[in-house]
Length: 289
Image: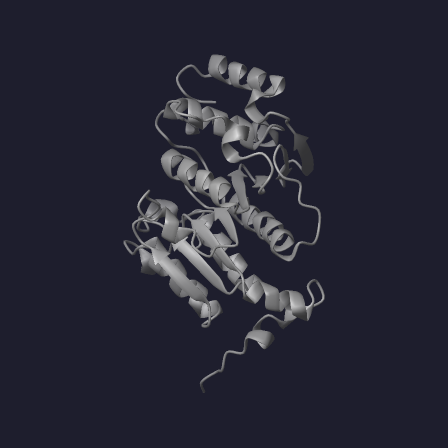
């Protein structure tokens, strides 16, 4: 027996935490997500279940067996398939009415305008080491006045930063400029989580090497990212709730049972951040923070 999709029934259990009018507002919002891997894929599915009506999604990669520990689209049946296509199918299985624009070549300078056309919010799902794409997307958000959220999976938790029009930009906070990739990686890692809650239970530090662009990950971190980013998205899109833009941020770590709100005026120019970066450089001259 064929089942009929009815939007109001599919998302009826959201009502109570949002009003019927607010759910209708979410249905008419468009979110851009770059990256359909560990965090980006679960961002898309979480926001689809929130009832967001339209997405622009970008990724050039295909699924590999090394993705199985953390990427919601990675299964034996999707090995070798484009991530953007697999996640689009999964989102459409949740909401057949969802409007999806795919960018299968990933984020490039020649498609940035199309990627952000008509977008209400940007959610960062890029790989940690996608420096050029991340710098380009956040610069475009600042230029176009599009609010943006980044939630990083760190250990068994997440660190969250929101960048809102009229407030500190991604570049203001992290200070990447034209610095080399190793310096960008260090600044990103230190800037994302000034509280550093995740570092205390890393059992094998050799698993992290910024020079080789590798590091450990957990599905718990990715899913906590999605919950946190979707909540920020809801507050921004409905203009309801406390959204504290950068230089405010927060880190929640489920392993440590801790939540820390951070405030770093000047971002990585703040004296505490400069000290943390100096210590990181001294501690791991080979590139491991």
